[in-house]
Length: 468
Image (cartoon, rainbow, N blue to C red):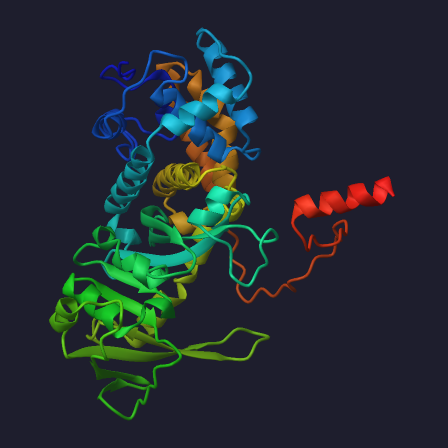
């Protein structure tokens, strides 16, 4: 057994770095480096026999599989064969067995580490002009993913208890911390959908290293409890969150800052069952919190009113309308998740074991961060903001340019990449204020009756009817 990286970035990953602009002279060029990948492999103690599916080729194939619209292992192996032929190397068999075994050998920690490092690097390199009031803003949100109905998946990530056995699908929860400016995943956690410590706020508490002093955390009402805000403040992190509907707000109390804008003292509630005595005693008995009412007017809809809680108490530095505008940008988290689940196809996972499902998620997140790097490069090169560029358009452009960049000479690479960035920047997100669309489909899909019993029983019933 020996390490196949041999102190330098292997060919497939060199191609990957060229594809995503990881070269000198470009902004955000050190988001993913050769040393970074090698160090991640080294820290996991990875050793490998000298075979075709080395760690580098396996990671490259896994990433291209996540980016591919097909997303199958057959397509990934076909891409590997094409890459080997293009570079004059011995090819492998077209079946997927060797590739699937190589993916199993790739440690989960390697991909997870690269996700966090690429996201943090992109977040730290964001230009000052993309910040909010000179502050780095991170937005947190969670979502659920489903996977094939196997015994191993049901044991690790059981289906919703409202579904009958054999009919539903296993489900897990992913909570992500995004950089609001670039859209990169700075940190993420994977857990069960239900059970102790499976809520979004519980999973965020376990991601303490995803937040740094001076950050502003943006979130919905799931992250607005007293203990959440107190924990953020103890870390030097400010929060802007929507108040939970169970908390009563009276703007006639507290220190008035403006219309429907005041500072009040929140009192520490009773100790919850999940918190130990020492942690509870360390929490402050009271905490000053600013509450601001936000009114959203959309043509054709009734006016919506909600209240935002924040630890940004200075009304002169952070006016109420500025806080309202920032909270409305919380919707970007939903768009980031949509890019992952719909555009990259992460909503329904394919792998058949819990370990491989987690690797599949981390690989999607790494591919997503690399695409966000291209969008940030295009935005900075063409005086745009990253949220003005289409994620799907960037993905389509990168896939179209991939083989061209891989086979380009070094003296042509910078010119080709400039054309890539120009094409990515041309795919703008349309400004469509007050757009109204019915959530209905005109084209009817083919109608099949719902499967209301385990598939094995349904097949047996069909066989019995045929035999009769």
